[in-house]
Image (tube, rainbow, N blue to C red; front, side):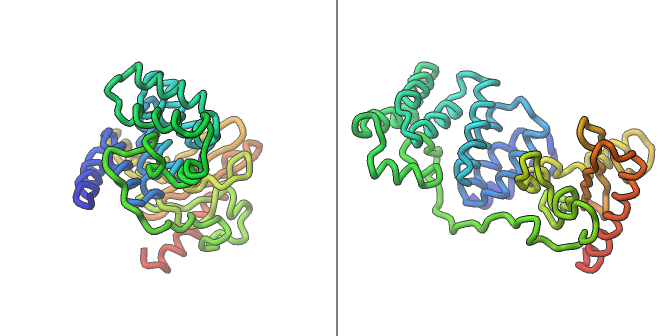
Length: 296
């Protein structure tokens, strides 16, 4: 598996638009490297936002991470794109089953089998659901449903048996990362520093609901520096330094700090772009000093 991961990683690095991102993310998931798998699949979906297989893979990763609402959204998104996607149908069935809604689980699995009568995973899952004592979840099934997929019987089974990885530590919270933006407004909510691989180095980004979305944003932004460099190269306009995106509620500034390291700054839409750029320059200075101290 390690050799396959290296091979697919090299292929994806050579062609970032390749669809091999799904296979790579799935291998990383089976190896227990779920945070890396999440970054890979989010980056891939950023390039292929209508790729049902990508959302199916995202659902499996999020189910492994215990993020049931996010997994449900991913599988439903896959079904919006491809209503007969077998993996997504088995995925939503898993969630219905885990929540004790055997009727909807059966409906989803029967749909999967109607689409593909040779889908053995769906067939075994259907037998599991129908055999779970009065259409409900028995004690053993309940415990099984609490184990991250693919350990749940049938419904989330992978083509190959998954390894039993050591538990992964949770992603660092904004407050536990290097305080390099201390003193700047939004130091752990509106400023994010990431490396070329899409790993969060410092700062933090909160969503509209107040939850930390740093890792997801970083995964989506992985490779942006390289893409911007290639684009400016094609146009023959020199090296890039800053990208500004204006949305309804905020202005986003992306700035390269060192080669590959990227800074994201979010400012309220009411703040003039010029001031947002000046603020981003201060944050970039702080990031550059910290990276220099790290030997980056």
